[in-house]
Amino acid sequence: MIQHERRTRSSGPDVLIVDDEDDIRELLELTLLRLGLASDGAANLAEARRLLGEKRYRLCLTDMRLPDGDGLELVRYISENVRDLPVAVITAFGSMDNAVTALKAGAFDYLAKPVSIDQLRALVKSVFSVSAKDGEAHNKDSSSLIGDSPAMVQVRSLIEKLARSQAPVFISGESGSGKERAARMIHDLGPRAAAPFVAVNCGAIPENLMESEFFGAKKGAFTGADSDREGFFQAAHGGTLFLDEVGDLPLAMQVKLLRAIQEKKFRRLGDTVETAVDVRILSATHQNLKAMVEASRFRQDLFYRLNVIELRMPALRERSEDIPRLAEILLERLAEASGLPAATLSAGAVKALGAYSFPGNVRELENILERALALSSGNVIEADDLLLDPADIGESSPALAAAPAGTDLQDYLDQMERHAIEDALEKSGGNRTAAARHLGVTFRSLRYRLERLGMKE
Image (cartoon, rainbow, N blue to C red):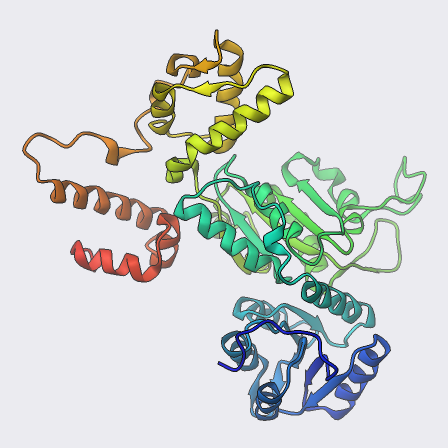
């Protein structure tokens, strides 16, 4: 390991440029100098590794093609050995697959050749804003995703890591599981926190208005366009654009969105010139996008651009231990909003909620508590006040059911554990890494449990 500690600003070079073309290195060095940043240049991987071992940098820019390897090797080397150094790859125009692969490998962002001065300036601003804010993430309010279950601890930890990157993040999960809250946390904890966060419900926009809503329109572009109008991309410039229910986008709009994401520019309706834009794309849906791709209802190339990194939000029934604390906080908020006295849950009500499957997740929990608060006759909410659907009771906590008489305790616990693992593997399509994430355990822990339970094959 070259460096473990956080970097501090020094009087030495700020940026390491890795490119085998002298003129490109010189152009980038001059551009950075105008931005007040000193830089070093390296013509190959070996020289880059040597400089990384000798000096501290705050940013690395690397070309994808190098004489003794490629930029991906350097991205992986930095991810393993200089973990706090943001690295951006420079990729040839049209080679978006390389950019996506680099982002998956741990790159902070990418630039397309020929490098735009505006894009380089935006990248530098993002990177150095992160450096200035190092250590602040823990001081920000991250309580919007409440819970101490292993699943939620893992989600919050991943969000803090994702906040430092500029890679597109796809947030999956059932309706009401907190996907937009997660997106807002990624934005709030990152370098774009002071810039706009624009959330768009893709399923709520009429198809004939989509292009003007996303990209804006020039005056006179269509009947009723009596002035220039900015779209979602312009509104989110410098910040984050969150595309909720992205699976609802029609195929024609998917093509236009893909181009805007790839080239970081768009054309307003009625305009003859393109506008450069600097936005980070976060997206979410409760639908199975992979299945939609297979059914030709969602473009595969757009799916891979959006799903560079996936964040899965666990369903509430998968973290039932968080329900009492969640309910307490929601009841406080509801009482304050309605002007009613604060209410508490009886032991029976807590037990009933723990056995409920919550098909609508946290959103449904809030609705249930709001209704119970209105119906309860006192300050204590009883199980009967919850009006839970009997069809959804008992599905979420099979391990809480009583063991049959004469059953060996260890055999019973093994049976419950086996059932949970089988369910997770089924939901993840046999992907053990995803199943481990679903269960809130490490991959190594899951592998050990599979071997212990005789489920290796």
